[in-house]
Length: 152
Image 1 (cartoon, rainbow, N blue to C red):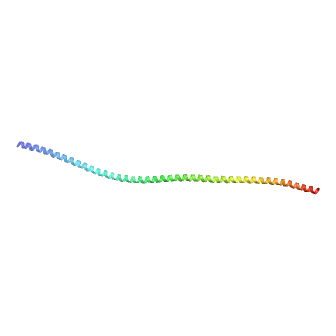
Image 2 (cartoon, one colour):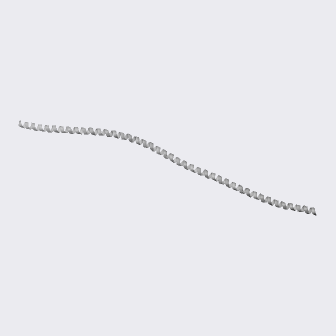
Image 3 (cartoon, rainbow, N blue to C red):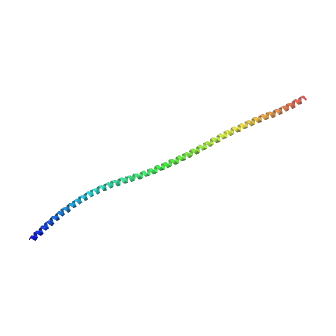
């Protein structure tokens, strides 16, 4: 019976150890469950933040694409403005050159007409003077002939 008591004592000790181990393992399980709950809560929080960040990233990507199109549109407008400014400058230069050419042609024609008029007037005066001198000679000769005829 002593053996039985010894066995019973060993069994009680084993039972106490196993009960202690059960309690320890139960605490460990509770601790791990607690950690798991904390981990799941952290995971849910992180997933919520990730969802928020994804939404913000999508909105930023959308804004980036629209801004990119706006930048392309503005660059096209700038290119068109520069092109039109160049065309305007070239047109202005050509119009200026054309009008100046017309002005120079007008001035040249006016001067050449004035010079031609002056030359023609001087030639007319010379011819008139030469004609007067010639007609005076002829008149003198006729008079001279007529007076010499009369006197003879």
